[in-house]
Length: 238
Length: 51
Length: 221
Image (cartoon, rainbow over all chains, first blue to last red; front, top):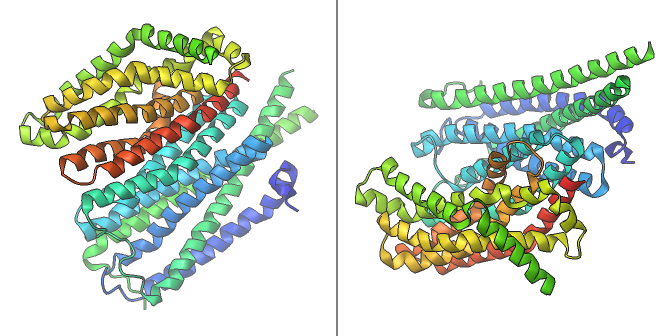
């Protein structure tokens, strides 16, 4: 049933309809979510800035999810020697980096009216920054090794090391934050979310998820074609 | 019906949405262009090989 | 056990001898410690605040120095192939290399760091703790650095690539090491961060060699 996960032809057949479908669902959900978002009155505590939360929190949640996907794909590629998994890992990295960047920028824009400064070294934002470094390191390593198979395997090892390290980083940053701030004044959710905001919030998260799914499939397709092109080029050169 | 007046938060809220849109447009565009490019490449090479 | 001693002796000789060994790391560290007041201004109050943290940070960066050559030399002249096929498991070889690296760079730096921190304005009561954290954190830096060095084998722009790959791995020891020193200076609980630092260093020493060996085999394939 899951042949599309490792058989390139099956994958291409699956993603052909899945990618546009996920994209369409994501777009519709985003429209509904944003509509509901702006139809709700401004938050009593946070004022109009609550609206930034609808694009910041999904971005940061997705940035972690994408990393998990990348790690799983890396593991499958490393252990089962699946080139499709290698391609999936490679395809996920720029998406994750983009989402992490969005999380950082929107987080900063959310924070400025709340905390008064453009950047605050709070636990979550600092962890996001380290996550961005993870992604950049991954992409740099991939680009720096010429041999494709070798690059894929080295990056897989790096991703697995990173996935072990990430909780440690989150923990250490959290510890460091309490050491320096004393109390968690900057809890992003505040004291809980007003019920009127919950549906659009959840819808936006699913919308982001759908967008990632769609784009990931598109990028893996591009990878499959690229490898096919390379094979054809080598054959033609004989 | 839609609360679109951001008041004093205008310079924070709208740029956040703007950047989000920009990044998504870039990710979507880059992904689609990449897929299209390599697909065309493969089709061209298959054509050349068939000749 | 005998084979391990031979291996250690070889790695120590290589690590100590080539490229100036400990002197290079200490010199780099001294240079960074000198540049810091030039960057922040000589006001003692300002410097004293950042002194422990920056001394620790300079340690992390100095340990990046000789990483590129850790596996590279053996990779280039074929010795890594032989080591991979030899009786000792590649994991042990990797661990020996990192351990030798630690002995030749972290030990001298553990002496230099407290001196530099005091020169920058930290209180002398911090010196023993700085030396201790430097030694323990040094294990973490050397083994994490080894992972980066092994992964970057056979790639272009080795040195910079290693730094980019390794920096996220350095974050926890930097946080815990500097945190321990600052906690001690502030009269807070310093044992907890020190324990976390030790735990992290031991974890990287235990698990790192497996990643390094896998990366080396990948590069040799």
